[in-house]
Length: 471
Ligand SMILES: *Cc1c(COP(=O)(O)O)cnc(C)c1O
Image (cartoon, rainbow, N blue to C red; front, side):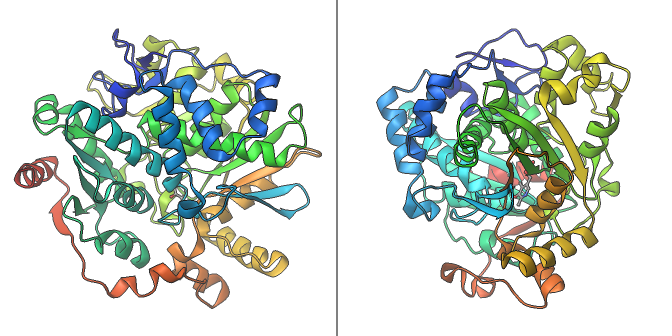
């Protein structure tokens, strides 16, 4: 399988090259040249497989530069009951008639990002050892990505992590999860700014090709294709649990921020998995909901990004969205570029409301969307506790509310549970008056010593810090 850039760069690459690379040289995102098509016989075979073997089958359609036996071993080492808490890895639970929660948050950091990041850690270690190379991972996090990356990379040979986060904007539990790590290869950098400032810094450093090469900078942000690919697997696993047979459609609702999670659903659907609807759930930062309702994509300024109680969705510019738009415009890189890049190379705004491609989008690609507010979140958390004795985190609550707005008779609706409630305890307390249960291994982490530096929202300052800490 070869990979291309959404912005039309002529080079084609293989999986292990883009694994360590992040953005394409022209600023585009990597996508496979085509989506492998799954027939019903293959679905029938995959239905019977344990998660790690299903992951191997799906990954091997996209990865042809790792020997199959090695890839199989990497999958087996990654997706264990020991790491993810159950043999199913992503168990499905029926909440009410036809509405299911798919548990993706029982990994080391209690958010769905572990599903991909744990695999990425093992892929990086494998590929770096094979090349005899080192990698410095530069990332941006509003909370969950950073901890998932650090827990996946801690102690791994050949890897350092430099993780930027918006100073003071993560929950105390999230901060403690990250900043309490004392591993020498993990560097926490608190930036005076919002998440988008952190993301802009990562992009600026990655666009400095000289620096990127000299310091062997890589990324683990959701633009990394390997992460997206790992996430495709749990759409299949969720489908097999929700659909009684392989000719039945299932819908998914996905609490969304950078559009990485739901983009994996899009890929699964393009491969032929019978997904009827992909519901994009947003919070008050509704740039994606606005697009799917109107066809207008209007990036917000950092100052207009609301700080909400589902903070991992506080995003004004969804970095994976370009992948979907590439498919939407018929994989026309010229058209894609004209939408995303103005004369100054900036992302801005585009309007597809009159474009036939957009008007057919819901039907062709199955996308729908919804928006939630803080009040909705509290109401959903209370209601889910009262009626089903189940605690959901604020992001999953946004998903549940959105799911109920798009139910179709006879079509199971799977809501992806993206985090456990303990990560966002303050909102749970506000809704219910008490703290959610905390897994024993996280008892008292807020009191542990913290390892973090504070820097201004300035790419040069971050470059200087990386240079200092790279010998
Ligand atoms: C990262 C995250 C999201 C958003 O996922 P994207 O892939 O960025 O759309 C939603 N909920 C939680 C809890 C997250 O950690």
